[in-house]
Each structure stands twice: as C-alpha cells, then as structure tokens.
Image (cartoon, rainbow over the protein chains, first blue to last red):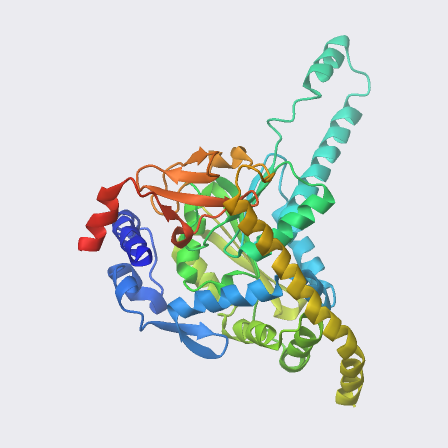
Length: 325
Length: 115
C-alpha cells in the first residue's frame, strides 16, 4: 500500500520539477513520451526495454540488474581482473590521467560500487598535492624570515585543499564491498558512500567538479535521465566523464572480441563466481549499448558541451567527456 | 583443442568451486544477520558512526530539499514530505522506495490514497 503512494508523491513532485527543466532537456527518440506525460510511467508498465538480448518491462530491468550485481558483488574485482586480463586497471588509470584532478576537487562517482575510481582519485590528488608542495619548497630555497614563519602557520591547513569523493550506487552490496576495501586500505577521510539512484540523485544542484560513471551507465534503465541528473549536480565548468564498453571498429578484432565475450566470459563467470547468467547479461548488455557516436549525441542532447570520446583497446572501451558550461 | 583444455580446467576446479559455493553462502548470511540485529537492537549495538559531513550536499532525491539527521533512529528525515531514509552500516540509503513514511503526518499519507 505504501509503495504506490510513494510513486504518486514522486510523480507530483516530478511534474513540478519537469515544468521547469523540460526546456533545457533534449529529447532523444527512445524516451520522447517520457517527458510529455511523466505520470504514465506509474500507471502503465507496457513500456519495455532491453535486459541483455531479452526484452523486459522497464520496471523489471532495474530489479534484474540489481539482482545481477547483488550476486556478483563479492567476486566483482576478481572477475574484472580475470575477464579483462587486468587491462581494466589501465583503463581506469587512463581515466584519471585524462581527468587530471587538482587538489580541492570534488568527485561524484556514480555506479561506483566497489570504489575503484574513487580510490584512484584520492590517490591522484594526494600525489598531486605532494608534487605541488615539493615544487613550492624547491622554488623557495633561500626564504626570508617572513616566508619561514608563514610556512609554519600554513603547514597544518588542509581545509582549502581538501578533496572529496562521493561514491553513489543503487546496490547496497557493491557499496558494502567498497567500504570494506576502504577500511582495509585505511582510507577514511574525504570519502563518502551513499545508496542512490543515478536517475534520481540525492544531491543538490551545482555541487561537484567531476562526475564519473565507469561501466555503469549501460545498466541504467533511462540513460537520458541519468545524463540530466549528471548535468544538474555538476558545477558550471564541471566535467562529465563516462567510461563504458563500446563498439570495436576493426572487423578482425571485433570477431575475436565477440568470440572471447560469448565463449570465455560466461564460462569464467561460472568457474570463478558461480554465476553464468550474470556474465551472459554483461556481454549482452555491452552489445545493446549505443556506439560511440550515438552516445556522444545523447550526451550533447542532455546539454553538455565540448563532447568528445577516446577509444581504448581498439574501441572495446570508450571514454566520453563533456562539460557543463 | 580449446574446449579440451577448458574441460580440464573446469574438472580440476570443480572441487574448488564446490568449496567456493559454500563460502559465499556463509558470507551472505553473516552481514544480513548483523544488519537485522542492528536494526532491532539499536541502542546496544556499536553502530559504525555516520559521517555527517556528507549532509552538506546530500538532499532528498524527491524534493531536493536538505535533510535532518536523527541520531536515535539513525535516519535522515525530510520534514516536508514526512519521510525518513535509513542509514545502514554508516551508508545512507537514499532510494525513495526504501524510505519510511513518518506516521504522525496523516495529511500527506491520506490525500494521495484518495486520488
């Protein structure tokens, strides 16, 4: 009884929000009617979407995706290493290098689950801070007494340079694994964990310098809504970065990649995580996701500027980036 | 050729796999039991502390208004809509479907039902 009530409350509030936001939003063909009659989402569930190669009603997709990640949470990191032969670490490291965050930056990592991006972000800004300190001290080899006394007073001042990373994921299990990792690595300051929906972020407007979503956006039911939310929570000048599996252009590599995906990965999933179906979903969902150009247009439609993409490993993974101006 | 190698790998890891299958089950039982206990026995359990610094930018996903942290029930309250979001293991759960309606606010709970 409580659930439909909540949905009605949601739709009422969303109606008032949508009237303000609808002019800024672009309309992508797939979800055109979603903007016109937001209340129809609650009452008629005959709009369907894809879950891998299957067609399912939209409501079901979210539940099934949740189940997939709930099942694989404990073995997620191990499986990533096994499936990508460790290359996923290089992709994520490259994301950080392209991002090049400065100390004091605020990151929102959506679908961040086990926290890979957030950990790398914090490490990166900390080493940046070290480098800047070293550069500053090197340039002050013969300081005056005034400078030395100033240095002593500012040494403990971490406030203005404090970087923050917030990891947001819809799945509690993935966040639990991530939090355990953080605790075992001894990282606690500047890191927050929040359970939230990418289509309805629990954050205020204009809050974050960088929004990342790594290998998560293809699991979102309404990608355009997630893009809208990303635009909302970013500060003006903020950067949207999305790392996702994409289309391989080279035909030979594409065939090898397909063979590897459909024959090796579910088997690895069964052997290591004991879950064939989840990894079958994984490889199917990659095929259903739009290609580099189409996704670039979706990001532009959401209102981002200077949208560009970089292909990694021949197009197996693409990094899309856009700015909120 | 590939399949025979794979077959060998699979048969050799079957034993390991059987052990692995039991392990995740126990892992799954553990945390859920702890969280159930935590929910029922709020005062006696040593809860992981909730970091209130996240409240600077955390808002209700429905109304986008700031929230109030309630230490006794370990929830984040949105007064306007009369809903409370639970905090489990120090992680706030901001999914609207998982929020609890605060019963004392009868106006907001009855009017949507009448529609």
